[in-house]
Amino acid sequence: MKKFCFIFVLLSLFLASCVSLQDATISTTGTAQFADESIDVLVILVNDLKAAINNWNSVPENKAPITKSTRTVSLENNSIAPFIVYAIRNQSSYPIYYDCELVKPHNMRSKFKGEKLFLCKQQPKRGDLFYLASQNYGWSLDETDPDGEYTILIKIYTDKNIIREFRMNFTFRKS
Image (cartoon, rainbow, N blue to C red):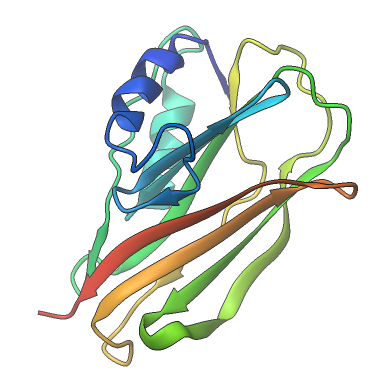
């Protein structure tokens, strides 16, 4: 879905809490952004992906939806997913894909990961709008998962090159 470019105002508020605005690949706050002359990508960690998508789809095109980021997961609120939106300005290679992988404490990799998911299948009609990723992926943690710091690795790429990699950190506490 698409949203009017006023979303930039909302994005600026999210990005004020990012680790570094010049190198937004690592986030300990639940939000990260990358922008260059061809693409602008915003990643927001959410506990309820379905609600975030419904919120995005229910707001008129000329309004900016509010998507609350998270950096914590518990047994009561046990899901985590990257909510990814993008704007295309001057991208020449399509489709655009992304991979996402969960890294547990002590560098243990989850056996469940999203590979070659579609971010964007073809050039969007308008370059001044943000669009929601075509496919989404997330995880649910349970009592068998260890407490501690987790990282979601996200790689955005085309068949020709890697556009950007993100490291999104969050904490899981069972109690």
